Image (tube, rainbow, N blue to C red; front, side, top):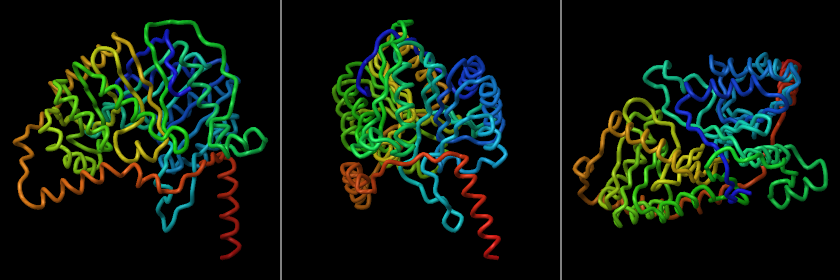
Length: 418
């Protein structure tokens, strides 16, 4: 399923939360049967409350709603906020929740980082935008620059099938087929809804990354596209520290005359992100790769294109967490109009909001520089294998109701002890 191209789709680019949130909320408001939603972050700010209200309204008119949030990314939703959802019949699933140790969250690795919405099996959204106000331009200078896509057409039932299968896989082995699926580390076999009629010109596929069957699917699609590029490669990615093979493909493309451009964070939300990326600048620039730092506000996007047809939008960064640990989802698109639209936007971004980094800006000399290059080179060569040593498990989805009951029980026990 993850590698099958499906024709006849219409794919629309949504830039920032200002375009994304109104479309998602409008589609939820029009839902008749089902809403499936996965997100890494959901905050109780004006965006989170607007999503909360839209979901409650839909649930109260009989729409079946399954929400999955990450236990690390969305740890602080209040009891009243959650109770309103569950009382309305909404099934809220928490991915790998874990207790705090001395006040700190412990489930740092292997996060559910996907951002997917499917409404009535007829329309889907995939991208990198979380449900928080810092994705709106009026948030100020720290508002994130980010992207998502709206998909209509035959790919949507496949995305719906995928989200449903992940719900079953995470909810436990309460039947023999599910136990078999869990032991084999595969997606449960579910019937796929009938294909939708063609509505557009785009071929597309859903590429996911997990820790069993699809460990490198998204990175592999990037490498294939870069290797095949003959004219241009544009990548805008928030957290950039890819593995050696992807880095090598970028250098090779530039050396054979492809216009390779990277748009990276100049005003990062986390300083270590820029520090890590700058370790690679000299290695890339000497090969002919062009680097642009986006300086208007933090870049949170994960988009790319090659030549005039291939594009991708999704949740996956090009860093160790996304490429070797997190659960991610990207849509890969073959469509000239979409590629052109995304390309024009990225060109405008580079011209108006970025500073190009030149080789003179990163002149490197001295023994320490050579040592650092050696260390970085070998880290990039081996980090996917090293990260693979971390424990692999089938993370559990816990219902919000069970979490609340457990929290209440813990509070009672604490009172009895005191």
